[in-house]
Every structure is written in structure tokens, then in C-alpha cells.
Length: 488
Image (cartoon, rainbow, N blue to C red; front, side):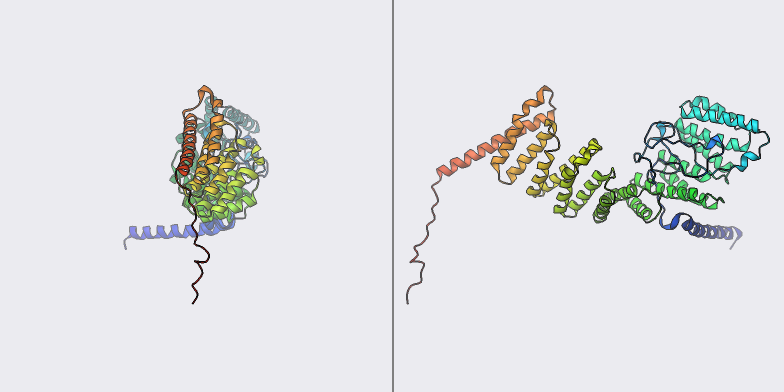
């Protein structure tokens, strides 16, 4: 074997060995690391508890998720799958519409003590704070030059590091994602032992995903875990939560890429962890959606039942019940599916006042889809139960007319022409409420209802006339004596 081949072999062996060591150490750091590689939405969340930062470069936004205030869109370090005491934000946010949040990183008070000129340091930090304020107030054009000045060679390194990170966030706020990536990479290359490196890698992964480069994003998320392991620091909880965040982002990247089978696997691994920082409700909700998307309806139904019992106040409740009803229907468990639909439409009606638009959407979608499927399969009785309940959701003609028309059609299939005619007549009696601005669709429903009413009435008259023309059918029974056996 020549030297080149021997060198290649040794490198491969070193890579395999390094992978084993990383997996072993990570299991101690993050709790079953090898079994829980998964990821999370685009928004790193609330700041970590810990000592106060020692300079202005570590300031952290305190706004609740989901607001448009500076710093609210990308809260540091914990995504929407991480448990916080604050209100949960949306599943994914457009990070281009709000300033990037400063990083959360372990304080290093010894750095400032080594500087020779405290007054100059205070002046430089004041300039850094001013640049940050300008960035958070969306004055990035003024913030950029101030930060570039702080990158001069005579500026203390502690200030240079923070200024370079702020400059990357300026590029991110300007939606110049390639430039932001370049600056973050420069920071990692210049200061690879900085305790903020793992979080910088996490931000790079989020930016790659925002750019549509999911494979590069996944590579960065895995790098977060590797970097967190090699850094020697006493801030165990900080890096433990950072590793969890990287795992969450991996699962979320698969989910957003439409790779639901992989996403389901990683969300399952996440839920096996006992981390108190994991937002289990949102992780399980993502798992249910992924399982339903790949047709694993038995597992989806099982997790949906568990979700509804564990998290009765979760905002995803109506959609989870819809997914449960759909999975049960596809499994052929029609009675259970009907029960879930009616429960969504009736028993939880009082709770819909919390988020009326969301509840109304899922109530209508669930009822429509399941009822229509039952109707097409010929299960008219169960379909009628849902249609009658749907009619109570909204009294407006735009909602009532299509539902009433479907009720009339169902009555016809159940051989109840009188009830069908009464239902069609209800549509015609209220047709005047449409006015002259009725949509073509609603006007078509009215016309079809009139046609169906005329048909039902014609059919009833035809059957009556036919009965009059035909002679009455009399039963001719043989005399009782003739039915007796003859005597021997």
C-alpha cells in the first residue's frame, strides 16, 4: 500500500472514531443524543436563565414571541418547540420583517479586566450600543459604518467580536443573507473557541434554511452539537438547551422540506426525551401531521387521542381533532370519525370564542370533508347528522344555502321526498336575502334548489297519478278449508 492510500485509510478511521466519541459524549450532554437528533422552527426563542451579561453586546430582547417589536422575531436560542412561560408564537415567522435578536452567550467577566484603558473601552462600548440601537430601530444604513469602525486593529478584541456579530445581524436585517453568512463564517474562523460559536452555527443553519439550502442547513445544525461538545465551559445548561435546539431544527427542516417520514422519526425521538425545555405539545402536533401525511393513520390516531387528552387547551386542538377524524375515516372506523366530528362541532363550540376564525375554519372543513366522504360512500344517515350540525354554525345565506342543499339531497337518498322538498323550499324562501350582489356560486345553488324542488314535486305527482291508473292490488288468499290436508 502506498503512502497516499495509507493516509486515506487513516483519515477514514479517524472520522469513524470521532463519530463514535461525539455520539457518546453527546448522550451525556443532551440526554440520549444519538437517539434524539431532531430540529425546530425558524425562530430561536426565549433567552436562557443565567448570570447577567458583562457588556452591552450581550443584550437580549424581552418581548413576547409573535410581536413586531425589535428583537421579537428571532428570540435567542429556544424555538417554538422549547417550553417557555411566554405565549407561544406562530410555527414559523418571516425573519426578514424584524431585526435579528442579539445572541445569548455565557458571560466572560475576565475579558474586560485585561483591557488597559477602561475609559476607551467604555467609549467603544457606547459606540457599539449606539450601533445596536440603530439596528433595532431599522436604521441599518447608519449602524453599519459604526460597526465597521469597531473592527479596526487597535480596537480590543472583545469589542471586535461583538461588533462583527452585530454587523452580521445588520446584513440579516437588510435581507442580505449571503453577506450575513459570510460574516458569521468569518467569526467562526477567526475565533473558533469563542463560546458563542455554537449559537452562530445555529443561526447559519436557520439562514441556510431560509435561503432554501436545506442540506447545508442540516450540516450546520449537526455542527452545533459537535461544537458544543468540544468547548470547555461551565455553562452546561446553556449548551444542553442549544443542543436540544439543534435537534429540533433538524426535525423541523425535514418537516418543511416535505420529508414527513424523516420528520416523524425525528419528532418521535425528540418526544422520548425528558427535557423540561421541550414544548411537547407542539412537537407532538408536528408528529401527528407528519404521520397523517405519510398515511400512517393508525399511529396518527393514537397520538391524536393522546394529544387531545394531554393538552386540552392547546391552540392546535381543532386541527388535531380534524386529523383524528380523517385518520379514523380512512381506517374505516366511521362511527368513531362521526363522534369526533360532532364533538368538534358541538361540545367545543363554547371554546371557539377564544380564536373564532381558527375554530370556524376547522369546524367547517372537518364537517364538510367527513360528511361528503360518508355521502359518497352511501352512509347517508351519518352524513345527515353532520350536515344538520353544520347548518347550525352560521345563519348567513352564504353558509346556509350550500349546506341546506346537501341536506335536501341526502333526504332524497333516504327516500324522504317531503323533507327534501321542505329543505329546498327553505332555500327559496330566503333567496331574497342575497340581493343583487349575490355571487354566481350562491345563485347557482338557488337555481339548483328550485330545479330539485320541481323534480321532487313532479315525481310525487307522477307516483300519485300512477297509483290512480293502476287497479288496486288485492291479496287473494285460498280458503282455509282448501289449505287443510284431505282426509285419508
